[in-house]
Image (tube, rainbow, N blue to C red; front, side, top):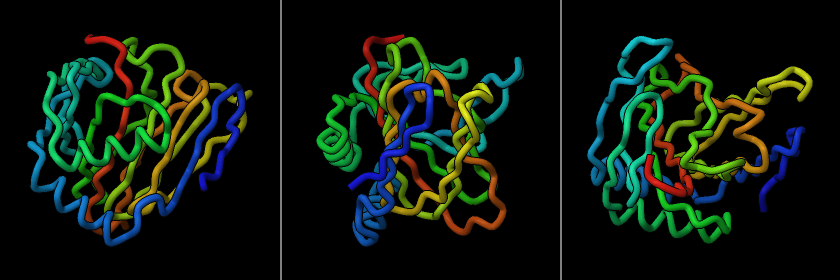
Length: 196
């Protein structure tokens, strides 16, 4: 059962720390590492082109555009398809795209951002499944009136679902964490309404 956290301003977050048991999470991590075509891409950050501090892969029948780049449609692998079905069934949202971030160690990260691209529509539900090393997930309001930020040490097998006005009023990220041991793979599930 998820712990629903009301964030304020109509935003909410469900957090399930052991949604997938450890043995299955380890098996999925190994399968994804082997099945996916990993890339380290350039993004535009404050007007400069820089390499993302992580590697990515993805699957979906529609292209997805973020940070100045477009991910072309790409077929699912057996493991991404199986996990997509499980997350769709749990969240009751017809997700049709998964972006997979591979944090090779504690130096890899993703800065604060919102999943608010026009192709996602107004107030999208976004689900993130974590496999591998425990990492800190940070959530901060865009405006102080919504209260304080929060952070979660997301462990392997955990599922985090953000909904309501979360993408409109909050930003989230995974900061560098020197003490983090091992790699983490996170799968972020979205419902794209159209191509970019």
